[in-house]
Image 1 (tube, rainbow, N blue to C red):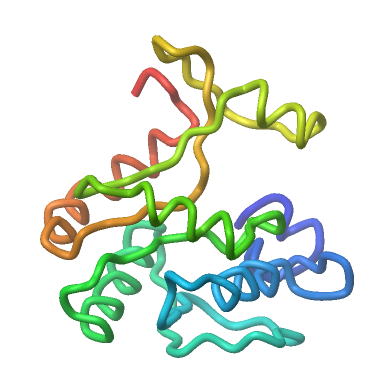
Image 2: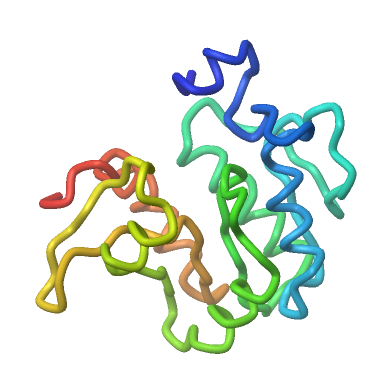
Length: 171
């Protein structure tokens, strides 16, 4: 269980109350505000108080990789042949315009945004992040991805390894 979720007595971070709503409601609102998103597949139990209801829901798995596989499989079935947006339910600052800007720039098979340290700390100076040093400087991950459907099967083979290494930059 996530420590933040446990401190609030809820099963997942998406359920944590934030400004009178479950945290995931902000993410669902951003998805609804995006011109790039048609259907939303929600993986896990939808918390009480959600005002933006997803198109489809599927149960979560025991591990992150299981949940990712269930969600991506449902997305492939719901929208065959379209690019898939994978986003976590704990991004209260996500906006529809940010999703659209990311979607416009996403041209690779797998797209994952990185945010320069200066940008992240300017907007969120108190937030704890994991930093990776690249040639361009220190960056942190943007917690969403756009994936072409043709690479989902290969990606699922690596999902568990990616998740396990998420806080270990060298890995």
